[in-house]
Figure 1 (cartoon, helix red, strand yellow):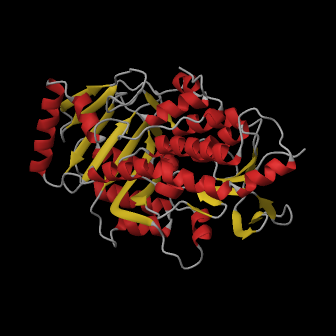
Figure 2 (tube, one colour):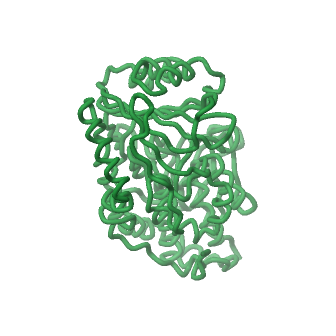
Figure 3 (cartoon, one colour):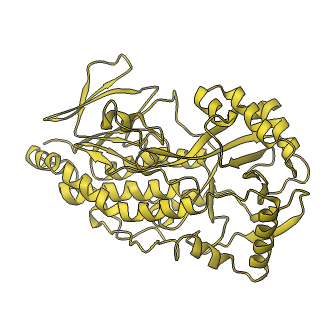
Length: 438
């Protein structure tokens, strides 16, 4: 007898452990390598919507997530004086896709911890390890690491889940290949700062001339999460140049300079982003999308932001869940795998190995129509208002939307007719989820 397929997953954030959960159910021998010295159970607030909720239920983690959601009453829009201009409450209806604030709002670190708890007993996690080389050979993929644990190891499949700047993607495409990350000229940053009296648990947003958005969320009583989003930045703008340099304090100063004096809480937020000790968790990145002709090469594949980052308007977590589900389902279908099937014989394992490229092709063809639509919708909302008049008109319209209770319709229009994007989530009986978690 022999074990199942031997799979290396690169990246221990959301996409990697999600795929590992499914593959472990299929009897695969899964190793997750993560460059961080410990689990990446950190990060700011994220949401799960639409298909992501459906898949989360199939994974069996929806109730765990619900136990740890951020209780965010709704989304509040304010003007430069802090005056309330529009408010949209969170509506909980079991799908989490009918209001601006989702039913499934959760801190990224909490979600990562839930995924780790669900996989740690069936998956091997190796921290502080980077992949330094991939070589496709007859028997699989020969992988070399940067640690000193021994010779290169051969895996049947390698999946890069290592983010928008994926090193796995670079190795898969080969030296000299064009980077498929397409920057939009914008950037986003988030940071933790001290809370003050009057801070609300609503998701608060303020828009200022110069294509600048600033927001806040409060998932805990002892701190506030500040958000900054901007667009239309030239190549030599300090925000973009400091992002390339990697100097975190210089980044913090660049963001503070760009937002100082813009109204609402800007003076407080820009002061704290530089001075507060809580701001040590500051993180910033360029906004953009990853666009590739295909997400696999031989027995190496990409998943999540590494393959199809949909920013700037979100959907990353949901698409990581859906991508992991589709990849696992197509591997099961093409490779003759099934949940709880136990060990397989060497002959069956060899057949499964040979079918991997066909499974990856099916994964690409099945998921791509959805990703194309999600990326299109995401780009549609990136043009931030640039003038005081445009902002005033926007706030007036949103106030009307609130009064007429049109926010559900607005969300449906924002996703091209609803959260399903006209795409049907496949069913994979091989994954053993006929009786989904309700």
